[in-house]
Length: 413
Image (cartoon, rainbow, N blue to C red):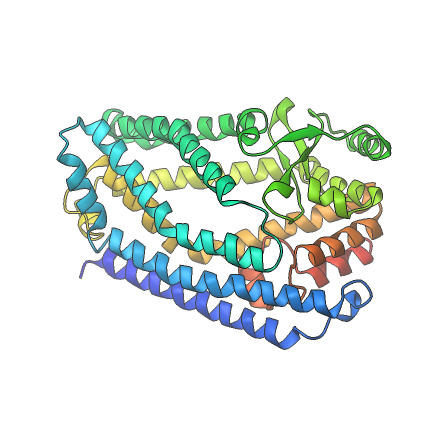
């Protein structure tokens, strides 16, 4: 058996084993603490809400375990099982030029992989989310979103694929550097265009209405030195009752987005504190840092792909007998997540560090107690578990556990 084949199977087995072990630990923690609200939350979160959060998290996790096994089977079928090779041979039968052949193969592979995961997404949305009272998406709206996503992927993704494949075949041995530059330009362009042109395809956005809340928001934005297109309210309630807020865009197109469900639940002072947290991500340059890390990782990935694409063993070891630019790109995209899985805790740690920093920023520019009370409401209303397993949380969670985060705010951020 080729060395790469052995390494791929070993990495996949290790990923499955670790994720199942962590999921088992998480389910055990949920079961042990289901009927007892942690003392710091006993006055604000009822036993019924706490149990509901445990049941909701457990239901999502059980589905995720099944999806993990299914995804592994699909991955093996696409690579060592010959699925990609069969798809490539079928597309070759149309007699298209190499570039069109490659783009069609990659597009059909992406479509097939998305279709393979669709049953789990449907079950999560229309069974689990509905059972716990979160889903507000109708089948018609879900289908419309699906078609819009497909159209957007076609409009944006197909030209990018065509450009990268053209560079792979015509730009010499340094093609990977030019492809990376194209990737960076594409990523920055999408970041600029997202708030104004792309996000409105899926949701409605309106400026925060005049009044006491808007005045408070404008004051805190001025204190934090934040100049943007403003604060917008998104109609998240059309699809879900979950509440959230986020920062989006770059340059003069950046904006803060608040879900309408968030505004329904939080008092004005709490909204101001949540906004201060989001502004903290901006003022502390977290967005730039994450972009830089993403682009740096992409540079490394393209460099590795530039070497792998030249090696016949790379293709044969992963189930593709005929080397090609599109096969190299497809195989790399399929197998890299398996080999980089062990880096997940580092990414989670870095993200949690940013959250603590943004909380401290919010505590300095708003009231820490109001941010804490807002977070408690969000934990309760979003059915977020208060008692995750420490190892599971350290590996998977981008935000600190509730107990640790609230304790840090009570200590002064």
